[in-house]
Image (cartoon, rainbow, N blue to C red):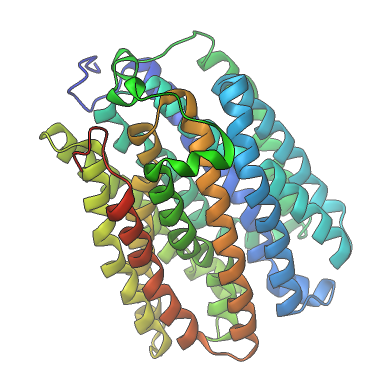
Length: 413
């Protein structure tokens, strides 16, 4: 049985159902966006896709993603998590399925842009849900479970996409995840049929803050600025793992398409463990009396040390040495992400959680576009040393922004 005490981490039965569905929605969200990255070797043969064109496809997604991250936050704060999240899941599932009908670069470019417009709502909707239905001591673990859905997606997507492509053709790799998203909708509607806001969330210190303006005016709140900086710099580490690891392994480390299906899961398994470990650790700190915002920042500040290990893969030649170093880095990315997604519910007024989260997500996408352009440039010159050198700087810069500006309510951390 799950305790209802606000000082306990354990979930109620209803919370367990909700967080399970949030896990699934994050998984579907990332499978849908990752299919193309796994299929890059096939797309090079099928439509003559070049590395620079692939960078354009990624940037089309990130550009729309950045615009709509803020927009989805406004939608979620207006419509609520139940309706808003359902609308966004339905929309991106349909767009993802349409990729199966694309036959060239221009068609993919349009569809990646549309996918970028629809997918941010999965994240703002989940964070809005966590802020409403979980207490502060539970949010780190809840966000970790949610974020681990994305990590599981990056784990299962390479072998799953390779299998579907080899068995039934590459187009099925877009259709099947799309159908799964549509099947998720009635389960969500049933699990959230009761209107509910956790008592501890109602009493959260952040709710006693003065009302905050929406949109860009939120940047006048230095806590929002700190979170924006964390995402502007830090999100690119996750985007690199998601969009470029398969390309890195195939083009630079000599992995065949079949090897990607058999071995590329390992870094993503490590990434899957990261949000759970990081979220649980910060929740334990909160349970021990550390302010929630401070606990998240402490754990996130440890993540860059793990990400730095990934740079060793550049000089590694043995298959499992390459995978192990990337695995440690991926674990660090997960530790960062699990706490990053819990922060808004702890730091901002509940009625502005999704808007603040969306604004920072837009900043993260903008940082990702800049980083992705440089990755595309350096990839064509096989200069992954420069790429990993930049990765070493990103999370420390994001952590510095948090410690400078993102204080706990009451200036406690």
